[in-house]
Image (tube, rainbow, N blue to C red; front, side):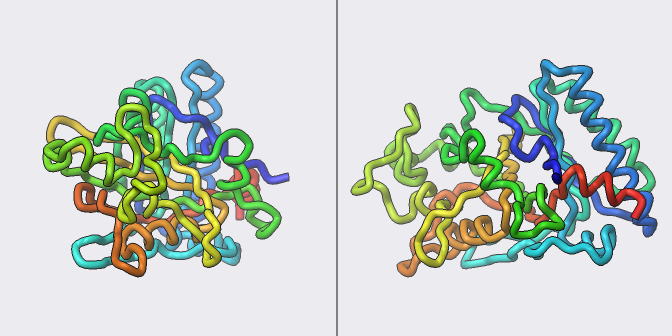
Length: 307
């Protein structure tokens, strides 16, 4: 039976290292072997520093997949859904390989990242690295608890991991990544009541606003993906804040057994409902990157390293 990568459904951590690579080597065989070796790096650090709760995810960009694994294609693999409406947009960033490293120790994340980059040196170009961190009690830098609606327990596996609907890629996951930059100054100048209306939740205790009080443009309403019948469809978020004294934002990471939940969510946020009620949070935070990936199972990566 296919075994999913540990990082797909791992519990939240205190620190993360996100690495974005583009491949500059035509030798796909070398890349496949290197990726399989990176799994061993994750396992080594997980065993050596078990208290740090190490986990990792290797995901392959939608446009690079066929070059890396020719003839083997996940059923629903698709490019990142490029969207734009007025001044709201979801730009596309070409990216061949996304590697997520998470742990409860920043030094362990750093050490793993160094080994990964050394392994891939000469074969890829690292064009972006982001250090994520847990902020206070799981809040984003706008001060609200983030990913409150994430599935819990074993439900995470049902939501995030491909099952029997695509037998060749059982144990894999569709991954979408966006880097958001937030205008914290403008946000902090808003009255608390207005912030809560935009988020759809109370700031202090994270309670949802009542059905009669929640605005149609609230983030919690607009980011709640639904299928064509209006039934909620879920995805698993592993987003974390990032930043320094000059730049602040959120590295958004979603995982699901299909790309449809993410596309539905993004459409609702950017285009809004039939009355034009888009996600008002997008007036204060802006997507600067976006990429779509597939994270194959451990079994698949190891079995195809010598393809």
